Length: 202
Image (cartoon, rainbow, N blue to C red; front, side, top):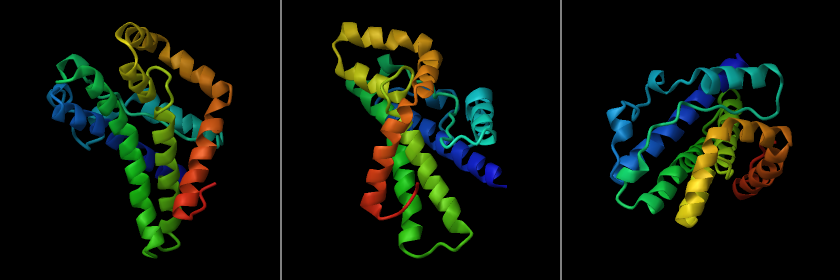
């Protein structure tokens, strides 16, 4: 049952992440996601067999302390944005920010004493999963959102080189995880969140 709850929270959070990219892109001039039917909370258009199902299930079954996954990336044509470079940064930032907002929203019932002994562990799990998703996606490794934010701040010639590395994205992410670098980023950020809201997540 715990695996099912984790899976449901993860899929919902990943979908909100992707939909947020699409909504901000639409506001800034690109309706590619809307045309593709991706600005919806219906999970079917967002499910990616590997990122949404296989990867998180394998991590959970392996007893990994870090559980994460991904929905199918929302299509965005940055050239359609009114200001392509700053728009790329805002669109890319929208996904992680959505996860951080969800994490804060899940804190509220706990702090107000509105949760019970059944709901509270689920809320804590939802907070932690959204923090992991948001922080992980800000890592500046292609194809993660952080790489596009970094690219948008760089001169054009460097921006294109960063974006070209997306073809190696899966390998880069695996190397990053294998070296244990994610923990060095996640732990300080989670502890900071704990200190701000006076809750214990890890």
